Amino acid sequence: MPRLAVFALVVCVLAVAAAVVSFVQGSWLGIVWILMAGISSNMAWFYVRKAKLDRQRREGAPAAG
Image (cartoon, rainbow, N blue to C red; front, side, top):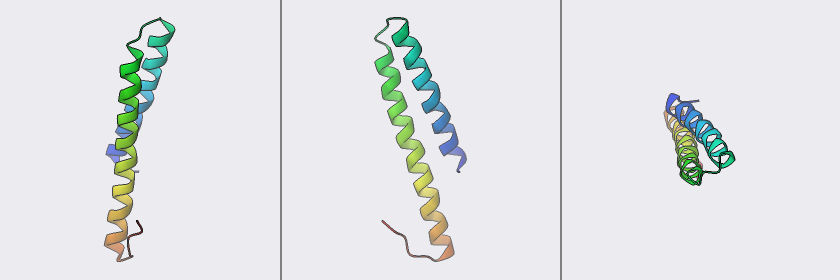
């Protein structure tokens, strides 16, 4: 897994934990953390997919999708 994807996944997990803590404490600021988790999960997915396509191009295999 690419390093940037791992970092984005860690940020996603931490943002979800922060959202849970915020909501448990009664703060609506957790909504911001949920949005950050969504963005970081999309970034992780993007970097994993990009690495997969780059690897396929290097090997000469046709790219799917």
